[in-house]
Structures are given as structure tokens and as C-alpha cells.
View 1 (cartoon, rainbow, N blue to C red):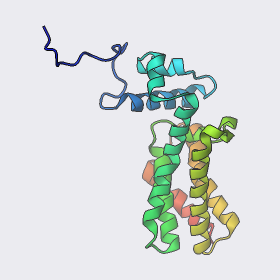
View 2: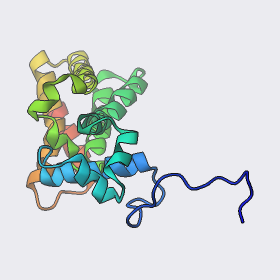
View 3: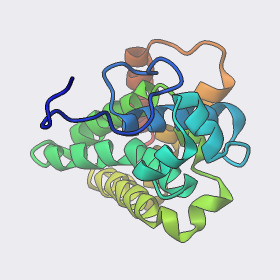
Length: 198
């Protein structure tokens, strides 16, 4: 017999084992959604399918997220926000060194994610209101690249080329069966970007 102060379990038990044993339910939902968006596509992935992958009811998913757009927005923001935050720590470096360091870090973020969510940047849906914060942060990161490139002696178009070169690792993840080690690719992208400066 339980005491009157003991808490009863809340909600229904999961239909299977946890995807990520040490993760919160929200983190598990994000991981499952990332896997499904990257493998099946955004349009072909429903919230019901995400919930099934996590082993929860669809209604439980809605406790954590209002809709599928909110899930994708959070995933996309997670591909940009760490690099944008890291860029703030580079103020004391010479422009070329700061650019090199940011590129290595940013490429590491894009390669380090378990699922290649960056591939979804170009979805038409990302132009809609739910993705405004993602677009704002991505544009702010692009502006950092332009600014550092200009301070290192490059032109505005060179800044755009550098930003595109960094994001090219997203396509490499999609297209190549085997990628070089992350350190090798980080160095290669950073070195190639600095060569664009002249």
C-alpha cells in the first residue's frame, strides 16, 4: 500500500526502450525528428511517425512541441546558434586567425551533428514565419563571415564564398559515402577559405 504522499506515475508508459537513455523526452523527440527529416524528408515525416519512433503517443509529443514546424525550427537553430555564440569569443584575434578559428568550429558543428539537418536549409517551408529566428541567426552568422573576411582583406563576395564553402560540408555529408576525418576536413575548409583572401 502506498502512502498518501507518494506520487503516482504520470502519463502512459513508453511503448519501447528509450532511444537515448540519458536524454530528456524533448531531446529524444528532436533526435527522432532529425533522423526522420534527414532520411525520409520533412514533408514525408508526420508528428505521429516521430512519436512512434520515440515510443510515445502523438499527444505526448504535443506536450513538448506545438507542431512539426517548431521541431524543425529548433533543429535548424541548433546548427547555427553554437557557431554564432562562439564567434563572440574571437574578438581578441587577428581577423584571419578569427576567420580560420570560426570556420574550423562551424564545420565541426555541421559535421558533429548525428543527422545532417543542414540539408534542410533550402526547404521552401523555412521561408515561413515559424523559421524567422533561424533565418535571423543564420543571416547574423553570414554577416560575421562577411565582416571577418573584409577585415582580413577580402571582398564582400569573398565573404559569401567563404560562407558557402563552410556550408558545402552539408552537401558532402549527403553525397560522399565516406568523409575524411573531421579534423582533416575542418583544416581543409579553413585553409581553402583563407586562400580565397588572396
